[in-house]
Length: 191
Image (cartoon, rainbow, N blue to C red; front, side, top):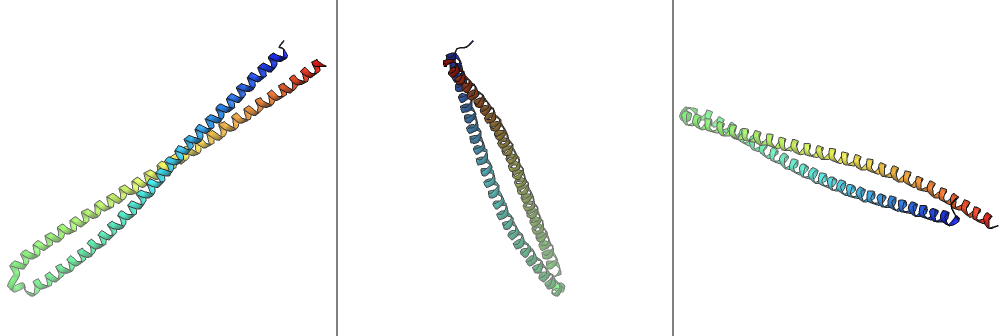
């Protein structure tokens, strides 16, 4: 049977071990909090990057719209010029038929080339806009994924810390009961 000193020594050892486990749990909690802060910073950076990309996309879209409007006006102007030249050709048809037909063919080709070029630029602009939209959608998915990961980590940390704290409280109560019983036994034996 253990002596009172051995019991007290054993209880002190158990108390020190419990305090060490509590310190480790607190350290683990701090490390998890630091990890959460790192994830939050990464999330903030991704949100800032997404905002920047969205702003650039909007600016580029605005620029492309302005370019399209300008090119549409230029096309309208070229069509008006074409109509004017066609009217002049009808007026001077008898004297300038051969020359005007050649000029007319050249201008048609130039206009077609310009129209094709404008169509090509418009297609490139639309492709660029789709690519930027795809990139923004991808960033939104990444942010959603990271948010879910952060939420899951937070829940795990909360569950782990709650169960560890509860376990340590039970151990502390058991140690205090044991200490109280030891003191009562010690007091009774001294009487």
